[in-house]
Image (cartoon, rainbow, N blue to C red; front, side, top):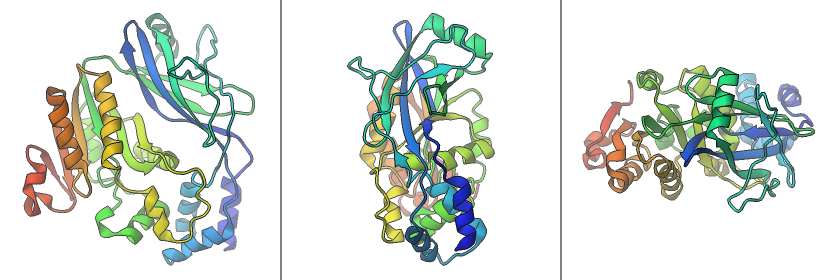
Length: 342
């Protein structure tokens, strides 16, 4: 597969990368609390036998399909870097202050065995105003970047006030065509080989919500964040924070395409419920629209959250990909149904 090897050589290098996932800030007293998730990793050459296995599983040798595979699997097989210390700085900060992520117990952790650092940044209201003015930002977005030795990476955070409208959005089969109900082989093709296709009309629906804040909560693994974020940007979906699924560090032991299904698809009920509940608790005065699809558990998860959080949940939109409105209408009771073809 010589053409694929050329593609790999362009994508895989020895650079150490800091992926800083898009996040949000919320008010806690007079300060802004910003939850941060960072992944430190190095690309590494994918074992050729796994490349062949994946390509053979969908019967393709097309250069375009293989290029998609290379771009989407690069982070899945990346080498996570542990015990790394990451320092970053907000763009255009007149004070050039250096920051590190702080844990709940007050420590400044280094990356764990999976290359992950999780914690918070705390900004005073005065510092936040200074940074917003310095970056001449709109809608509360700030940019920051890693400046520690041998690290490169850029992050984005939106400071969100306590009142307003927010959207919790699923990704697969809600804003991106994945076809989970069609079975594993179709899902693998749509996730790793084919060009991503946006769900018809969904970007326009989101744009019509004006200055709403967006949180993308997905059952996909964090390692697919980059191609999914490209889809969101290229198709005109609003920028927002990401909340995804954690998967094991070492995925080089894959032996069949079926194992890839562990990386894709809807979140578990527990994962999605926990991630969304955390956001709602941090913004008790905001109104929320939940957007999902009928192919997996979104109606059930969203219905339970509506019961738990009451008036905070303004509406639930469900893109009906399995004709649930006729086959099982009780699932979608009180929800706004979006036709699959719209």
